[in-house]
Image (spheres, rainbow over the protein chains, first blue to last red):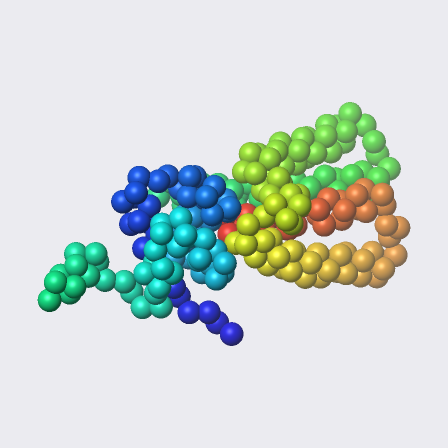
Length: 82
Length: 139
């Protein structure tokens, strides 16, 4: 079975919080290259890893990962205001 | 751009590494067959071996591929474990086909299998997973 592409906001959340790839990798227990693969959406994480990423950012998994392309944050905020 | 150059450099290194290993074996077998060991033949075999060892260090040592394929499975993260498993799967298939082909050639030609070809096969079996990993997944 081919897995679906997962979109994510890891790069955005990481830069927003000023965390380096290495720091994030250490916190979630993976190699820093794996963070790069995740950010480029070239690798789908396991459920366990997705939850660990969610715990680091203090956000629910569905806010970080999606099966459809994610809207820009400005659009999300605008939609919330409406 | 730089990434692509690095990637093609590693692929070139892999080709050089395998060609130099094959050259070492072929030269050794050739000089053994004609039974003509002299200074020139020794230099030819040693040069091929030197190129193999140098490219081995540059391709597998400097890139960290050797370390990655020889780390305990428990020390790999989930993506690395997946990459390693896939590399091993492909390497096993390639090695099986390669070794059976070589054995067939030796069986048909009735040449005796030398210690050097045996050693080369062992080296290939050992470096094949790292080679597949570098060829397929390196970025």
